[in-house]
Length: 483
Image (tube, rainbow, N blue to C red; front, top):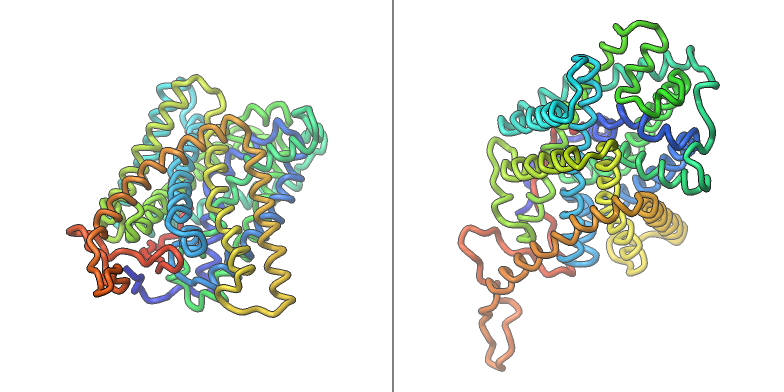
C-alpha cells in the first residue's frame, strides 16, 4: 500500500513541521520539573541539544536512503526485519499516547492559574481528561479541522515562550538560580537525570522523516529541515528556560505548577501577566495534543498496512485513522487516572520519563539501522570521508540515546518495559495469522515450494508485505502540524 500523495512539503514547510512538533506543550512545565537538579539542568540542555542534532543528522541520512513515509519504523524494518519494525512502531505508538497523557497533565497547573480555588485530585483528573478529549473530538472531525486548530495554537505557542525568553533577560537575577547540583550525589548523575526529563522537549525531531513521503526532494530537504528545526527549537528552549531560572526564585520554581506564569508575575508584579500566559499555555497545550493525537494514530496505521498491527487500525474517516485516535485516547485516559489515584505528587515527571524510555527504543533502532546500512554497504554508495562521518554520527546518536535510557531511572524503565513487552503478544498473534494465511504454497515439480507464488490472504486484508530483508514501507501520513 504505497503512499500516492503528491510530495508537497518544501524545506520551509518541513522545517516548520519539525519545529512545531518539537515545541509542544511540555516546555511550559519542564523548567519546574528540572529545577530540583539545579543549574546542571542548563548544562543538560546544552548536551541534549548536541545529541539531538546528531540524531537529527542520522534521520536525515536515513531519509536519503529510504525516502518513504514511516520514519523510524521503516528504517528498523528495512534493516532488521518485521520484529524490529514492530518493536519500533509499538514503542513509538506507546510514546505518543503516554506523551499525550503528560501534555494533558501539564495543562492542569495552568488551568489552576485561570480558575483558582478548585484544587483536588478529582478536579485535576477532570481537567486533564477534558484537555485530552477535546483534541480527540477535533481529530474525529477530520484533518481539515485538525489543521485549523494547529494554525491558531502554533501562533499562541510561540508568543509566551518568546516573550518570556526575551523579557526575562532584562529581569535576570543570578541569585535565583540555586546551586549547580541541587539534587545531591554526583554531577554526572544529576546531568543524566535532568537530560532524561528534558528529552521530552525534543521528541518530534523525527517528524520530517516520518512524513518523508510528503516532502519534495526528501533526500535533501528532510535532513536540512530536521537540523534547522532542531536548532531553532533549541534556541527558544534555552533562552526560555534560562529566563525562568533567573526570574523565579529556585525554591519557588521547584514547586511551581505554572513556571512561565510565575516568571511573568515575578517580572511585572500582580497576576495579570501570569493569567494571560496561562491562557496562552492552555491553548498551546491543547493544540499540541491536537497534533500529537493525530500522530499517535499514524504509527499503528503504517504497521497495520504491513500486517504487523491489527487491520482495524487501517480504518480512516475524513483522512484520520479513527481507531488509532480512539485507542490512544482511551489508553492515555487510563494512564492519567491510574497515576493520579496512585497518589503520586509528580505525575507529569513520571509520564515524561516513560515517554523518554519509549522514544529511545525507535531512536536506538534507527541509529542501529544506520550503522547496519553503512557497514553492509546497503543503500547509496558513499566515499570514505562521508562514510567515516556518517558512522561517527550514528555511533554518537546511539550512545547518546543509550545514555538517556540509563538516566530515565528504574521506575520509568520498569513501566516502559512493561508496555514494550505487552506488545510482544500482539506481534505473536499477528505473525501467527500471517503464517496461517501463507501456509498453503503451491509446490513445483521437484516438490519444492514455489517461491514465486503469492501467499494466500485473509478477506479484507491488504497485500502482504515483502520478506523482512527488503520490505516496502507503507502508510499515508497525515500532514497536520503536530504540536
